[in-house]
Image (cartoon, rainbow, N blue to C red; front, side, top):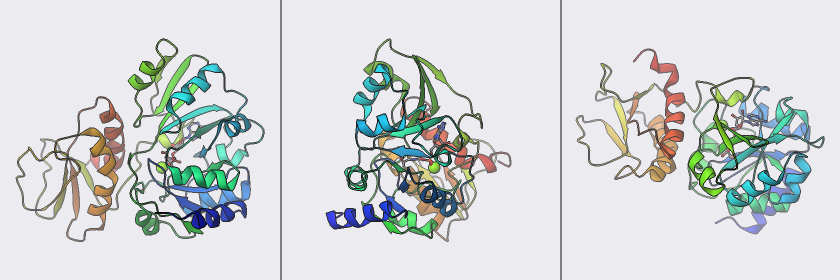
Length: 320
Ligand code: TXA
Ligand code: MG
């Protein structure tokens, strides 16, 4: 799909201090050379991202992990061997090589090795770690296709189009301090996945939103450009100007508006993979003035899905 000449061209732009949007298995990232503070500053500008919100640095091998942190002990290497490449970001003490702008002045840095081959090739070809937040305007819907990136961002030097992403929601973020594994953001990899892969190694802590630890854990995030409500049995219900996002074809549709299914039978991996595209489609559809979405059960991957939905709907929740 993406030719090696395109990867080479994109890597050249990264080396010259430019911005490249690229697919990962989770969402599209907006990348710059993580070791070049001027290039990283452009990410904040294009995304309109507040400078207090730190970036994740993407790597392609363990040498780059060692460059970015002096704090990777045996547990961290074991964790990385189990889950990388993959949708897990590990927050560790940063080394002197990481510019402060990447971490928003925090003494820690979030690091992840993505599983998407295009992302890995881009990092290898660039020969530097690549800082990349999701390639959307700050607070808006995450992009799971190249079209979603084009819709929101201007000033990107190159977009690698790898089609729709497979996982569909952002990586799980954990901070590791000794044997404490603190969840900063739920994602595709769950606490059970980690404890099953490494039994007895970590004590788990589930963090509450706290601006000082992870500014991205703000209550409102991932929002579409029109009102979004999580369907409940209370007074606010869809009308014919509404769009409804459902996760199963088993339930009866009780109105005539637009319906999008993320899954036929509430398969959580499918719901996650199709969640942001469904929200983008509803956002783009001029016949839809208000979006409703069914909740899912908050277990396993459902925890990450509901995290995104509650934040996407947060600003409207008070009026529902
Ligand atoms: O799946 C993903 O993680 C995607 C793809 C592109 O890799 N990236 C992504 O980046 O979701 P972003 O910037 O949209 O979300 C990163 C989150 C932010 O909420 C930020 O606050 C948090 O990671 N973060 C980054 N570095 C951190 C650190 N040192 N300590 C705590 N939180 C950190
Ligand atoms: Mg984001």
